[in-house]
Image (cartoon, rainbow, N blue to C red):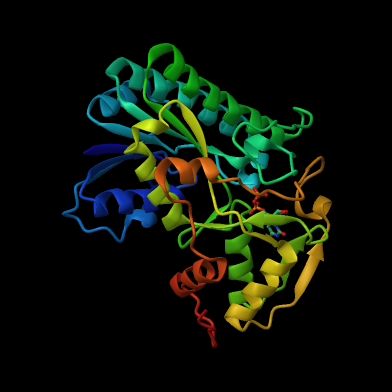
Length: 327
Ligand code: UDP
């Protein structure tokens, strides 16, 4: 099979490329390196069936050509990270809205299967948890970049589903919940790489707010496995799937776990939200996926434990701890 991975130099994208190559597929990556980096693919051997094109998904003629040459498209190119979205609102809206439009229109012309990556952000501040795919989305003002981002991703989802419904195009939407693993950078705000970096340099670990907000963290290898299996499962087309693990931890709990695992001397400090992000930022207290649809459809849901995932992240980090507790 020939796969096209948009955003393939990003964190999840590069792990997806590993997974596809490992299954014997050939892969073309298109990435504009806005947040992705070539280093994420540098471990791959030159004789692998991999082509990397540095360009934007907004380049319609290129996308048309690449889609024509692929059997399946994994559309992961998107603005990522709360911090990046807050810093680049125009670019994130453009990439997310126009980019998905371009990819879906090309897939429709060439009748190709498409997986569109979305995010748990679309649920907004619905923190009633465990969130099911058909649950209500609760959003604040469109002046808050976070909700605008959620709106753009929801529009992407709607377009993918419309192509399935109206044109019979095999499309599937996946909503990623707090995915973690090696190669994820803390530069765009993500909490786990930030805490690990801080712990491994014995710097204060910055827990935002009161630290009682919870998230569910999913190991990237499990996410990749789910995503590839979905595109091999005809029952998935025209539907939306939460992809995540449903075990919750508070940010205080996460900070302590990272300290324990690394043997760090870091202190855990609390930083008020208005110091951490610019004004008007809203966080959600809780975000838990209901993964029963995923489990029912592919017979599997992510299951790597948080300690194991953190262990792999710490083991891959350039700065190694002096003591290391193996889970
Ligand atoms: N967070 C934190 N310290 C940091 C970065 C993030 O306490 O240095 C918090 C953030 O406010 C949120 C949680 O960790 O409550 C998860 O943040 P992230 O940006 O990783 O993901 P998302 O908010 O999209 O779930």
